Image (tube, rainbow, N blue to C red; front, side):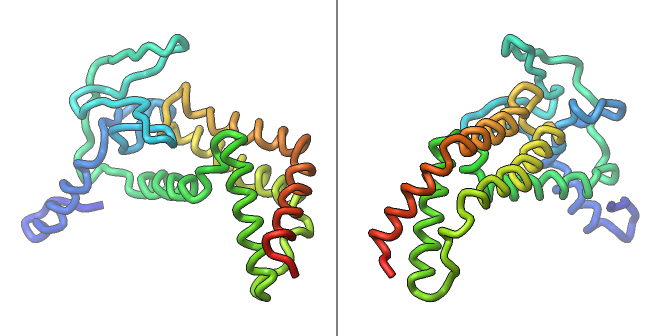
Length: 201
């Protein structure tokens, strides 16, 4: 962290500029209510879920969807900013952005799964990739369970999407996994046929 000293003016200015990105953080707040530096949360369509200013505490969503504001909390001094925590949060957001289509509903998952298969099929025919047909059904299950579900749970744990909406990613991934278990074999069969037609060997 940066400390204000007569010989460290530049670093202190950088810390202040960096700190302006942060929302109010409580000194004694439970981790689940901390906003981790974000002034606004949005869903994957870009629609705002919660918005608040630095002069008030982040709104809390009730079970009915109503927003409640409470007494403003003291903003930390720049040197108190937890940069490691900020980095961890941004890392999770970047990972989620990379696979955002798989954190949404079934239609998006299937659409992008098919597109990826066809991209790999074309690369295979061109001699640049192994045949994606082998193990496609099982590999998708492994990806959902071993990468997407843990990522969705981390997004819920860090609390950046609110208490109510934060768990939606977990529910989406679990629903997609369960549906893939039931329909994934037929989806795989269909896209394999499309791939053979578009990119014959």
